[in-house]
Image (cartoon, rainbow, N blue to C red):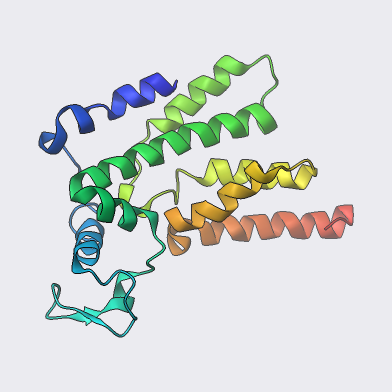
Length: 195
């Protein structure tokens, strides 16, 4: 399954900057903002600092948090390879999260082939790279929440809850996810009398 996902992503590295990249909601706004911020030298600047390369200067606070992983990938690896690594991370986490969710919480242990097939299909979906793990990371986060709920969580189950917010948009997807988890918690609290 991982080899199929890697084969799907291989044109980004085989063709390099000549590979095809979807422009809509991808290269027309968010990627440009992240590139401008990464190249401005003001990623860690105060929120009132003006970034001069856009609209005759806009405040640093309009660009979002400096703790966003896609911005740091662009900063360290440049606009294209930062973008490509972002895409690779998103698809591999999508595969891993769905496989983990299905293997640990949905399917029986003798249904591994179904788990790999569904996880591979989920890992091949055309996620929007600039919003990070907002959609692709939900299976991993749900798996972590369910494992923690069972009471047999390890540090590896808490780790996605720490780093997925740095790699996703709270407003686009995770506010709804957390609302559903809140309803789940409320059900546990009222019906099962458990926190």
